Length: 250
Image 1 (cartoon, one colour):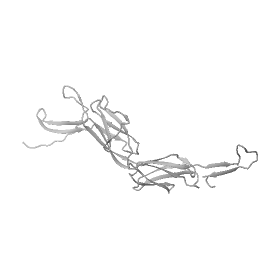
Image 2 (cartoon, rainbow, N blue to C red; image 1 turned 135 degrees about the vertical axis):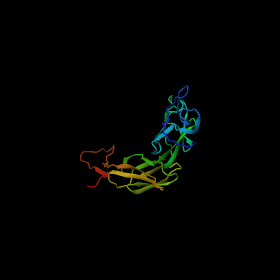
Image 3 (cartoon, rainbow, N blue to C red; image 1 turned 60 degrees about the vertical axis):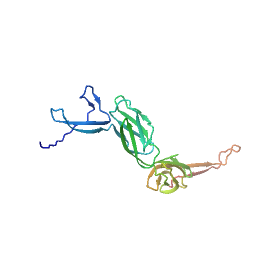
């Protein structure tokens, strides 16, 4: 007899309904059999793996991002474990075991880690899903507005590990520091003197080019001096001195 070939398409079912009892299709290995029409003799057997852990969202963000992992069609009440770069990470919300229908939605908070691609692995029974998550740099300020000579603390995450960072105010370097092994740092800087009121960019960049920026608003500031004291209060007609900083020139 001559050899013949064929090609066909099928959809992976939600349930197997051929036997005495319906079986829910869940993550794991299944077998696909081929027979001749009208014949029960099996010609070929192939393995097919159903991926039950289906997606991670989002796939990019700063440290602390709430990342969602979804899975479908497992056995019910199965434990879920999640690792970040091979280390166990707490499930911060959602399901810690599959629900009665075998589905789950779990959340983790991306832990302190360096800029770049990291691996998140979720496991249920013998099924494992692996995803890539890209950490991007992020900075926050202790205050988003202030005046000249104020001290401001800047905190950063998601930079290079053990990297030197430069802090710039409106393009001028006002401080340097180093990140820890996980790409995080905390540093302080003094707002430069004699800057006019308005928004300015605070930017942090490490030696590898990882950077983040936030806006800082300089506010005009008035100081009133009169020489009056509790023992010698002010009076009508006395001279007052008003000093202002960070006003815009006219």
